[in-house]
Image 1 (tube, rainbow, N blue to C red):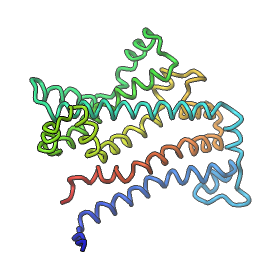
Image 2 (image 1 turned 90 degrees about the vertical axis):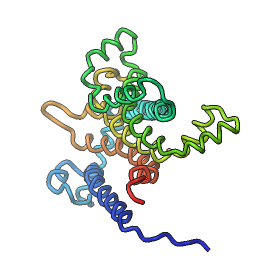
Image 3 (image 1 turned 180 degrees about the vertical axis):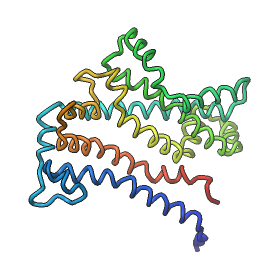
Image 4 (image 1 turned 30 degrees about the vertical axis):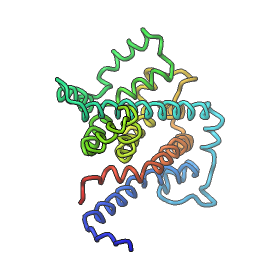
Length: 279
């Protein structure tokens, strides 16, 4: 007979706080979406009201479809985000495994050097990055964005994953070595499955900044063929006139993929955030 789990007030409080936080965080998204289906006057007159027969309008989505190549912008954002996350998780996990598993001179200094990337924003080196991309012929390519975002996300990935990998039993890995498994098989078959919550946490923390970023797409890939969804939405924002219907419609379309990916990783994200917090 299966034993029931003991009631844990701390865990219940933690999950309740996460639910409340998610509701608060999603409220602005809700406001953007409902206003994207309204006429311009209704957006400013009753911003929190649901669209009705008098205020309902699809003019924003019609404008988005007619102006700009938004399917291409969406494709570029997906390619950049998914590819960058893949490299961040792969290289970050490999570096974290090496730092946590092997002892060598300068191990702690190497970990500290990688952690400095969390405190020093990559945008400080924008001029140097632009010069590097110009010299290598990568300006106006998605490769430039992928390289920058991978470098931007690696410090946080190594910092989080190394802490989780320290908790993996050494006896388990030694037993695998006795059975003849190589270090690569131990890493992919044993270590990575055990740190899936941490991988999801790293993915979510990096996914949102990459998807919503405007700075590097504007500087490194402003061409029509390489525009991301966030950069493409700026065509509706002018110095004197802003097409709010189109802006809200474009933002709504940009939010949906992020919410979808977040929903996929949410369960593992909560496990990663609460791991070790309660006993």
